[in-house]
Amino acid sequence: MRNLRSLCGLSLACLIVSASSALPVAAQTGLDEPHSPQLIEVHKLTEKAMRHYRSGDIEAAVGTFEIASAKTREHFGTDHLKFAKSLNNLALVYDISGNLERSEELYRQALAIVRRKGATDPKQLADLHNNLAAVVLQQCRVADARALYRRALSLSEATLGPHHADTAVVRSNVERLDRYLGAPSRATAGEAASVGQLLQRCVS
Image (cartoon, rainbow, N blue to C red):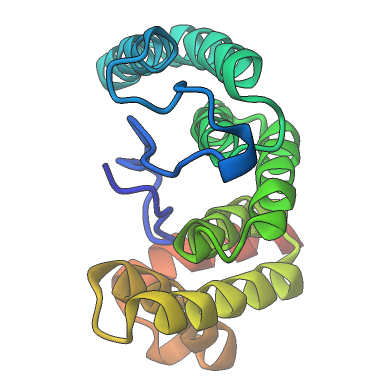
């Protein structure tokens, strides 16, 4: 599923069901085999959490994603891209629940992992910058959010190309924020509703 947070909406179809990145060669243990018990367990927990999420039971989704993340850490360790993806999922549902501080903490933990392995999955690095930017913006740290969105766009263009659908999501986020900050009167109704409400809350 898509794992990019859009600036213009709070309805997120952004959760990651599974990961395909491999363990480092020196640490190959068979855990990444498609039918390994460890991957099956994590996958089932993630699917269960997503069912809670889709039904609107965010509290249950958070709890189940917590378990899925703990199991991912147990099976793959704290420095694996699968664990980073589980942290992204957990951060997204904490964002929806309104716990922005916890969401940001989890995104930054995931970023630290992916930065160390950025050459392995630069797309994930771009996605995390984008999602973190949305949480930072909600906390009224507009300059920080703008920088994160721009970094996400640069990474996405370099990794996926300028015309990829995911790059378009990130570019839209950058353009909406820049346009509103630069000339609010020229922002569309949708931009005014999404960005404007956030920024009005920041100065109220």
